[in-house]
Length: 190
Picture 1 (tube, rainbow, N blue to C red):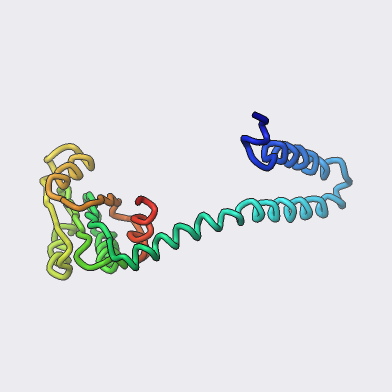
Picture 2 (picture 1 turned 90 degrees about the horizontal axis):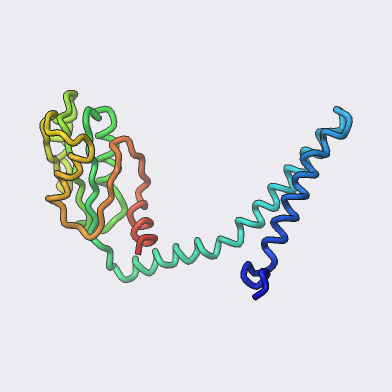
């Protein structure tokens, strides 16, 4: 079997040629007078940028397929249940924002639940979580003593005994999410 048959469309040869040309073009400004080095540098940047776009742009079909899968899920309404799990210790400053983002995710109602493990926080996290659990029905709070041990993994393991979703999504308390993240992740995962 010929190497070009394996790589398809002589990709290795093209890559090698591209690297050699880049090396020569990168050295070219050093051989010219200082006043003339700007033009080759700008030309090289434009060529490399154009080539990069040409290489990346054909992958748009692969991304389009993923979005079509997402639309297929929307039509079928067969979304799996997801448990979102966050272990937090002294995260009062970021928990409110995170829970607001999680509560308003674009995902079918009743198909996800939020689990926050308060791992012995000594700031106002416990009080904040108590207030937020009254506001959001999908929010479940697990409180652990600071001396429970195991750190973050111990906190996550305590929660694993209580969850029952099809999928598990583990986050840090300072995560920032957009509203469509769960649907995209499930489409990719499946």
